[in-house]
Length: 126
Image (cartoon, rainbow, N blue to C red; front, side, top):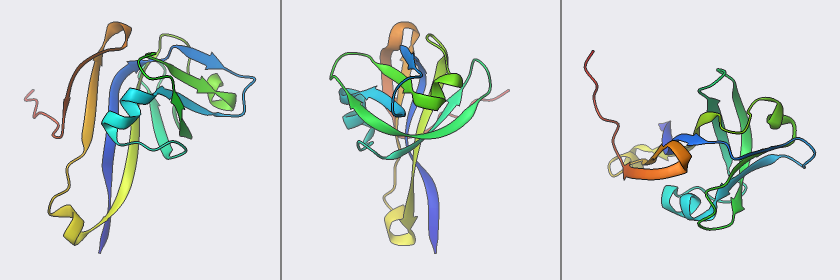
């Protein structure tokens, strides 16, 4: 059996650019792509915390250390500069792969400051 699992997540990263007149995609700081294990041209899901929009696009490599999150093309209608978003990539894994599976998750504070990374979502009690 194969399972679709969260592979990588950039949590609460802020959109720095929204460029309507562009081919499409989402440019992401190349350092963050490497840390998260997201490949250039890989399909990603973007969840906009500011307005509830959810959309699919693909990642392109932005300049390393730039802090860029540029939502491009038609997706620019779904996110504005300074919107906080969650960017996720998913993978399909076999049972054997799941034995050692761990997602890569990066967490951000205001101004796209990376605060920490982890491979487990902390349990929050209400």
